[in-house]
Image 1 (tube, rainbow, N blue to C red):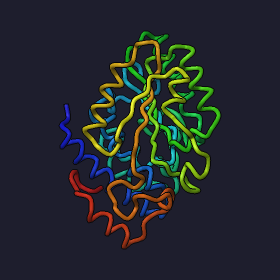
Image 2: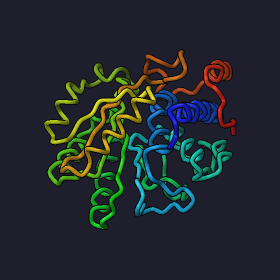
Image 3: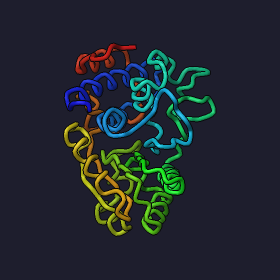
Length: 281
């Protein structure tokens, strides 16, 4: 069991990784990656049963995770590397020619930890439902987890999948929505308001929880609560409030850092705000 302090230290290092990875090729998506760091760290280092040294595509007898908003790849790669799926030094190849660490996660290079290509928004919930149903058929008691952006909920396929999961009692699935209120073109409310998400998900037949995604203690507590709701005939969704760019003051509170890399000075300014806890790659 990792302590909250231990998880926060890992999260600080992961945020450093994200910034350095995106700065290197001058390409990537820092805002959402920084905002969701605490959640992914808690998931991999505390909540999920995984087997990094013997990764398999079917994930039998393991919890499995699907990153639907695949542009948060720098975050996922850092956590996978720090967890032991592949060497931490490989993070330096992010978005380079012939790398396994592509801008959006892909499977054809065989990167351990990745079970499906993602980044075409709206598809990840359907994939997670499929994995959940496979586990039920295999009498596998482990869970499927997925992460989605709030702007992604503007995609119709999400709601088809939500309806299907409830109708078929996919109760071994925990989906999380990053509710940072920002997307590439502006605020979610300005682009296409989502209205009352709690009421929508409940109307679609899901159990709904709220979570502060930038408070590690609340993240762990909420994920533990979500796990207690599985196996009760309903899928579970967590509406996770985060701040885009969390951890770096000048990146917070705006959509402008959705897909813009930091320059040399901005990188140094950002790294000064984050403790190096596990050693930079």
